[in-house]
Length: 444
Image (cartoon, rainbow, N blue to C red; front, side, top):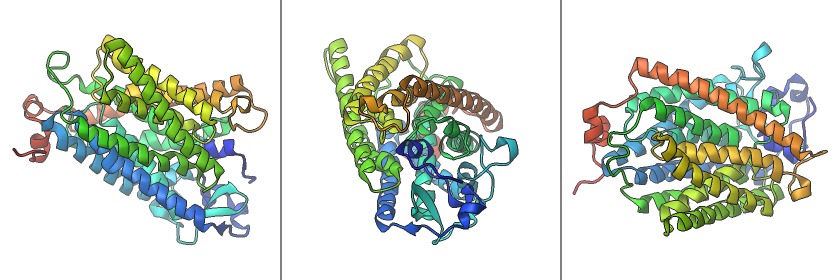
């Protein structure tokens, strides 16, 4: 099978494994492992772990009330651990191998289950004419993406869902929602990959996916007791600030690591991962200052995360000026979604998972079709048509929305029937730290 070598193909594909590319390629000479690329991928993997635990955990933990701080830390940590195990048992195989018969465009097979055939000598070809990274490095890198995605979801129904429901939903959602979407977008035989959808580091796979699942969860679990009446303010914006900073630092591994090589394209992704969130944070701050008369720390942190989300699918495809424009757009649109649309509709997305990750992911996915255009300073390949690529991006967004929305709805219902989604009235009043875990975050 002829492997696409353009950066645009790399952006939309991540990396299929050698086993997935067919017997013909396996018979070719083994590619030379590049130590520099390998080192970069190992560092990038650690950075994505950092952005999840402790980054995301602290970001979320600081945003809830004192009595629920530990529950958020526990949920993020436990989700990461559970997905890590499921990923090596069957997740990697279903995402990055050829699927059976007519469903191969939507999900992979079990040829790599339990990491069968993955050894210290096996490689994941990086579309660079024979240069490769160890397959274990690719397995670990993609594991971190699979782990952070359901961890993002828990912020939507924070402070009122049971721990056992979170764990059961995570296992089911990873299997039936995340893995098919990852396969469709990043594997060479995937439906959206073959369509030509661009997703450099997970705008659809991670952010739209988690945002939509979070919104469905918030609606099904219901509003927190006292929502719209009582003060439900964050208990520690200091911890949220620390978490936001760790998220930004870890995101360099997330975005620049998705280039899969230590090259100029990785450097471009790194630069864009600085510029887009900076622009988005400033845009959110300006909008907040104009509307409310004051700019908040939570606002600039939220804006920066929105910018990180939006640049993710375009990180290695947009020029620096394009990344700034995308960041500005994401900051303003997500501000409206969080402060106006949510209030108007009245749903309780506790930590704005949909407003930032869902909406920001949509802005980024569609915007990628524009900012990747070479005529606008981008690095899209071939005979690039902005209108044509935007249409493909819209199809990718719609497919993800439908797959994730329908799948999540069914899975939440199953979990509710099996173990119950919502904590009891007494548990919610007492706080999930004590109710679910028998501990307090702070003992005064």
